[in-house]
Image (cartoon, rainbow, N blue to C red; front, side, top):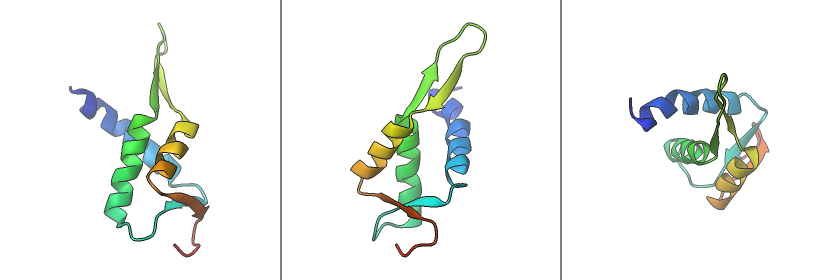
Length: 83
């Protein structure tokens, strides 16, 4: 299994977890498809693997994710606010 194939389930899980909050990332003029690609790119780039003998794991560096989205021109707003 390639690295990308192993990472895809993690990205999907993290994306679902991020979408359950009352805030969302917005950027005027960006399609939903592009926003999804940008979110996935930032999720992948801010994912950190934690080494461990018995329980290796991973975590999302929230600060790195936020910086990535902001660097792409997005801002966080309360869900339902005008974009």
